Image 1 (cartoon, rainbow over the protein chains, first blue to last red):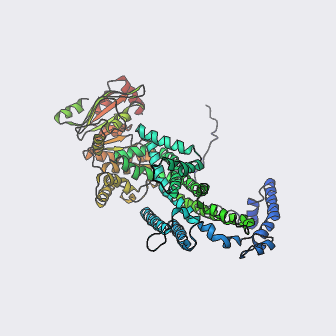
Image 2: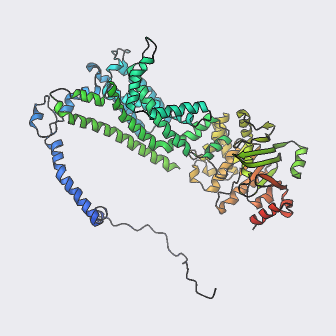
Image 3: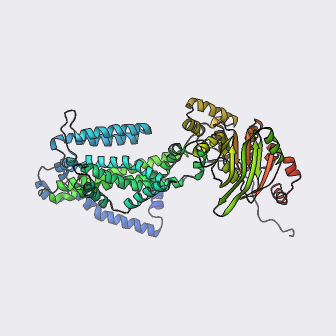
Length: 370
Length: 254
């Protein structure tokens, strides 16, 4: 090496701390950045505008301007060029409550209010986990009293008369409340060191996951009674609830298993060294971490379970979708089934979107802490 | 080996490994490992990576199981019996290379979860003890933070405090400073040194030779799954007998 000059060099810092440079504000820079960044981008923007220009006025005309909102008979709808929303106020009792006795439908309304109200309260007021569990337990007991009747002067209503949104909501809450704990147990069993327990759990999960929900429901509603001893029968609602819960649990188990695998081996070892036994280790150390990890995936399964409640219509139960399709079989209104279905679609969308927002908020809070 | 054996004869050793053998599949990871640790004495185990030093101490509290030989901790044999394993774990605290704090619990709860949940200690009593120990490792002001908000050195000191919560008879350290940035190694070694001066029985797997020289009563050198040499620090550093030890020392003492 000769005396060649060193090319690399560094400058000793002299800068002061200052705020980051501001981007240009205003509408025009924003438009250029977001909608007209490149020729292709501009083309896509113009094309989208054109599509909106062509379709939006007609859609709004049909859905709003030319629509009929209230009409006791379908006459006004026949004259109008737009949507016939009048089908909803006309048929909402059957759509929302199905075959529940007409004079007792206030009880169904109360059930809807209790379940949705409690869900909103839990999502917004954020009570402790213990309060959440206790209040849901109490609420569900109240819901069953209201639905079944037979006490406190309430007329008895058998489960085969249940229907509409209360049935959908009860089925959904029952599925999740029963299915999540069962899924956790199955996932733990699948990782058990005892071969018999492992085999049972793996067998259950694989069989249930290998069957379509419709098949599971048919098995529960048609085959299960065949295996029952003479004179003994399980209520059809309970059979459907059982099938939905087991089906959900198999998927929940796989979600939880993923979470269990994601918790590091060091966590298990540290829990061992501070003296916790298996049960304590799971409850206080492992499962809380699993909960955080699997929240998005579990919420996905929960939302799917909500939509899956529509399958019970196939075995002859009147969930809100089936109740709606029955309601619009009225020959006077049958032409306006699209409007009725759109209303139900909005109902599902609103609830699923609510659950999705709630889970997104939970996720956010949990990541802040780490 | 002489120092440990002399003390062992004056009073019973608290930890005994007697011809411990272990295999991973066909691979023989521990070969006739025999070691006795007297009460209040400090053992440093060193050696190249893969030499079986971590595995040895992980067998003591049954995070790993050995296939042959005996391990006895304070009169209790470590075998497949779960109750005996739990009894031993109550007497043995452990600090890991990667801290392994519980990320979903505050520092305070990390310390109290074991005593409160496993031993039924009252919450206020456990908290008082936890705050005492956090003072001892010099981070009482971090009690309500989550582990993810602490530096590596602070996390490892929390881990030491957590291990002390069970008032253990023996502390195991599995490379406690290997995952730390250089400027944080000292704060952890200082805490360990204080603990040693307070009379705790310690078995440390570490590459910190200055710590070993200062604190250890006996330095054990392992290579390829067996104990190659064991001697007090002056002898170990001054006149190593084995060629493998000399090679190792020339590599770690730069």
